[in-house]
Length: 115
Length: 112
Image (cartoon, rainbow over all chains, first blue to last red; front, side, top):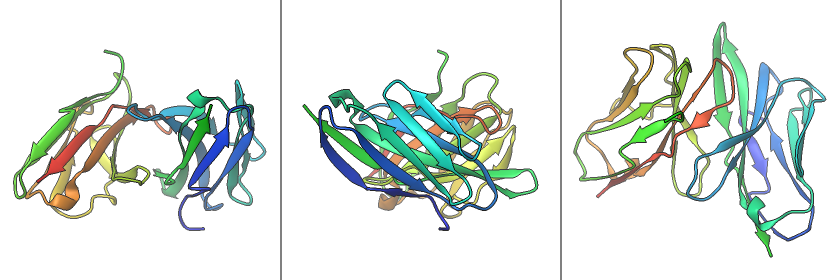
């Protein structure tokens, strides 16, 4: 993996379903992994900032896990609601040398929750 | 306001013209990022400032694109000789060093 890859690209679920999606990133020079939610006509907003291997974070019905050794993070949504419909972006902070750090975004997973 | 402010929110220009997009970050944030989002894509990195200097400008697509942040606060993204392919939403975000990003609402550029 050279870049940040997210799967699936898009997802349709019914209200009440639980769902999850994946962010894969290079496992070398890891500093942090961010998850953002981007609703239509709004700006992206941070959900989680994760730095430690094995980290698990939770905010309401949304949770995320992190595996830095194998280079992946999962985002879970329990009991999806229509207001969860958004694009979910992950972004990977890596040390690109010395004090240089670079944040690279994936293309996102577009989640649509049907009532 | 307390958030990241971007102006203009919408800019329509003709091919070949010069455009400036402005970003006012959150006060106290040392890091400032410019991203570009084309239809159906995630945000594409353009340039990152830490303070006044560009710490990483590797995402600028060519020498028609330039950005400045002379006093370590407001930043201006400058695009010369605009082309139709430059049409996109240009997002600015600011953060504390290596912290979560706070985004502005974007400047939508349309080049006719």
